[in-house]
Amino acid sequence: MKNISKNLAILSFLSVGSLVFAQNTKVSPEAKNPDSKALIVKTDHQELEAKKKAAEEKAKLPKPYDAKADAEKDIENLVAKAKKEKKNIMIQAGGNWCIWCLRFNQYVQTTPELKKLVDDNYLYYHLNYSPDNKNEKVFTKYGNPGDQFGYPVFIVLDQNGKMIHVQKSDVLEEGKGYSLEKVKEFFKTWTKKS
Image 1 (cartoon, helix red, strand yellow):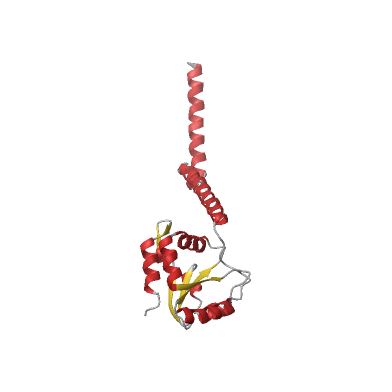
Image 2: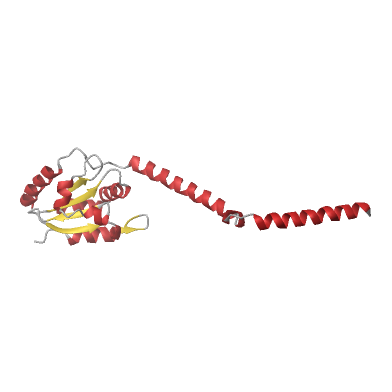
């Protein structure tokens, strides 16, 4: 009986002590929901994994942007050529740092239907925007569409070099890539009208 009384006294003390401790202790949201830390760690891990996969993908894709190019001169030359060939000019503005820019280029180059549509109807130019060369003068001439729409952004010029359309790229996307029908329609819409 003595042991039972002693044990009850200890239990009572522990219960009161736990209650006082619990009342004076702030419980973090993570402690209330132990799964939340796991979720944060899992989310961070997923984000790191996604960045790693994107970097691996980017490393494999062709890099069509040239930071050393004289874009102003290149576009002047394209306008002269466009007049002779009676084609419009498609400028894809972006940079080799931009995975969506590289994906679009790869998509067009590896989709025969799109490649033929572009080759038959446009002179195509990759206008670089990067820390090495922001091509500020050229971008200013076209209203700095990257500031408004992000990259890639498309600037369509007629055969005389007049800007006739600016296209943001997100409307051409579908899922984790680009829509064949949307891209095809975009290219068809801005071909030179006879």
